[in-house]
Image (cartoon, rainbow, N blue to C red; front, side, top):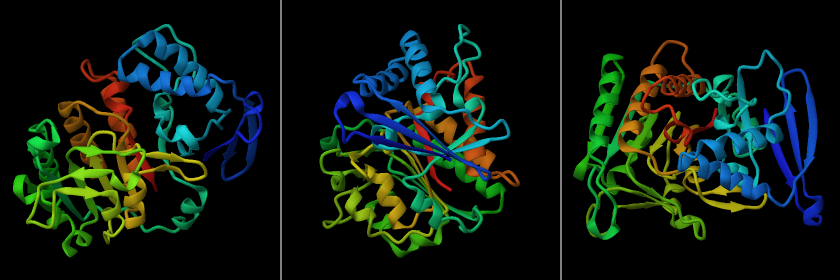
Amino acid sequence: MLSYFIDDSKPASETRLYLFLITDKKLSLTSHRLDKNFNKLLTGFRNAIYYNDPATFQKVGLTLGKLLLPNIPAACKELIIFPTGRLGVVPFEALLTKKTKSSNDVPYLIRKYAVRYEFSASLALQKKYAPALDKSSILLCAPITFDEKDNLSNLPGTEAEVNSIAKLFDSNNSSQKILTNEEANEASIKSEELKNYRLLHFATHGMVDEVHPELSRIYLQQSGENEDGYLYSGEIYNLQLNASLVTLSACQTGLGKISKGEGVIGLSRALVYAGAKNIIVSYWSVADQSTAELMTNFYRELLLPNATLSSSLQKVKLDMLQSATYSAPYYWAPFVLIGF
């Protein structure tokens, strides 16, 4: 476990980052003084990935890697990240572990470790005795088309995405249900039936309001006069989920308001409080086709015997690294696993 804390109670020149490394054998603490450019480094790292700027990425990714990654025991295969502040929207998997001049074998952190995140150590402690991952049923939701007033592009690739995933579960003798077009409406998602599914997959648009996080929303189809098709964060809190995993195959669903002492408050936090044991969300807008491929391959891995969420996501990202089309971190880095 890697837990981070930033002490900014003193003058900016004395701001420090504290890093706790916890294994089953020891606890260690390191700290670094943060200069005034730290937030610029975080922004530069995300922008270098999003805008595909290899030169800036190499420089910033290595600088942040040295700052944020301690000496991790050689036997470690998985990291649980407890971020703080703006670290809550940084994909640690894309940090660089060493200097390199090769573009073919970039030393991303994901090459060495499966990575998952948690909001706080107290939440992790509550999940210490969580039941095994239940893959017996899945509900897949894809509105595909959206109201013109929202100025959102249609997502034709999501129909193929949910159908492909459903076939995987059908061949695995797991129950599955697909909601597309008009059936992918707000009333269906608010129904009692939702808690009967152990896996929930939403292939749609999402919008995060960083000023008013309760207005962050998942876009669905309208259903009747009382349901406008916007599943707001405030409404998600009232859902009764019994899901081992909720996947938001949508844009920027991992973002939110960064609150001191609380971290990122948005759709992901709402889903956890509604009962989701684990969630997969994204940090930025991603391509329709690459997302469909990543998600389909993720569930294929997950359905293998003894597969775990973190190892399945790592395997898919490593496979994308080897592809000619989707090797850039823009395609695989934004999707992160939160929870156990």
